[in-house]
Image (tube, rainbow, N blue to C red; front, side, top):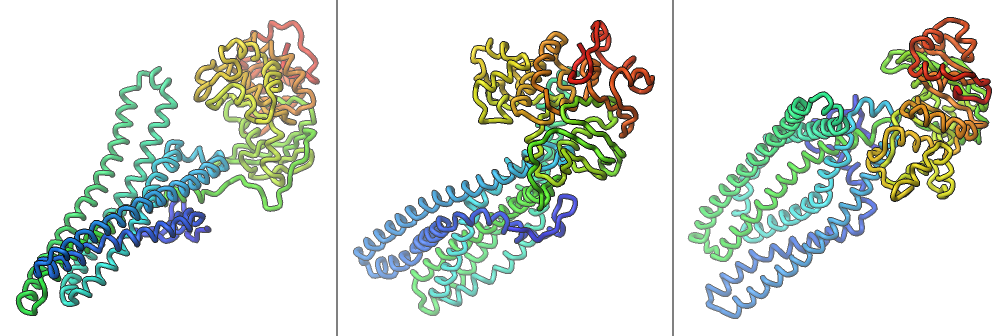
Length: 612
């Protein structure tokens, strides 16, 4: 369901009310596919609620017709009827809870799935603005809050509402005057609810916000535990986490204090109503001939009258928390996708690999990172991007992969603007090997076949052999079935990078992007994979971000970046002869230069990516 509310800076505008119907409708929409089972649950709620209210009526009959008239048979029949009503209530409640739980969990399953799909479609810029732990909190903690509300809260609301209506009707049936006396305390209840609800709303929003902070701090600390231990920051980080955790605890205590303060107020108001009924009802028994059974049954109804009200106040507090959690979740669900397919986007046909940057401009947060970048890479060419840190090299390949949209100019592949084709058809023709080699938990085989899940075992092994990792994998006790664990923790940095390389090659991309992909591979391993890479990269356009000379000197085209623009371009020998920035990088800025210079020959750059 579309949401009509307006968003501003990731927050809902004008959400002062404890209940927001737009948020509620969006969340309850997940119950729509299960409306038949939900309707059955509601019918069972009504049965259970009305069965439970048979007690006061049976109590009146037992006193007036049994005790007052000394009729044991009546008492026996009343006792049996009471047990039967309890049995009906128990059976109806049992199946209602089971159905409600099943419906609630099914709807929450869909909600989590939708959020996960959304997260995978969000632009990279979203994750630079939002801590990963806070995003995880949306899918875990906040969804759990909504799960409790959907599973129990909604059914409880219906149950309590039915009970309340039936009780009020029975009270007026017994004695309209006593019913009116009982209802005189409701304005007090309303004032108390107004007072506590405003405090609860703020408290629960603080709880949801601080929970996100705890998750964010925890995730960052776990990711950086090696750095923490390296610098002896364990105590400092623990203190920082304690402060964040304490803020969440304090917010939770404040929310709990509001709830715990409200319940005694309700109990006090209920006690006042009971006292009024005892006084007024007792006078009715003495003066008007009202039966003792009627008075006792009415007192039982009064006691039960405030039970659903207490439950409704708890529901109201739960609603406060749910609205706060729902607000956070819908902020994520409604987060605009900064990079999305146009309505008229078409499939990119199989590419030959001609890449054109035409006066491309791009910036982050209003600051230009690329300014007027233009170049052309012909099919099969090897293009190296070099330059100082922050010059715009990684931004260039991120734009080519369309992780961001250009601010100005255009990028074309075989004459097709990448903004006019679908992201899927574009990226399935790209192979990217990042410097930060990332492996998913699971087997080595699954990680290599990540881009082509349908690949055969032979194809997986061929890709691994091409990059020189096959023999290593075979030496493992479980071979390609070896679980690499989270982020590939069982493997060395170099081994992870080689597996990422095999993954990209198995995907058979038309355009290959290497972001310092051999930075963690030793010189011997690098030499071993060069010939295999030469065979596998034939006919593919390749872009290499590199700081090592061995990955630059054999390129067909070297682009030298500085301050967001290309200041030099050409091949290795020509750029050296110019004596410009590339020459300075060559003489001072390339790690591993000395090792490369021990090589006796420089091979022809055409069809050659690596220095020999």
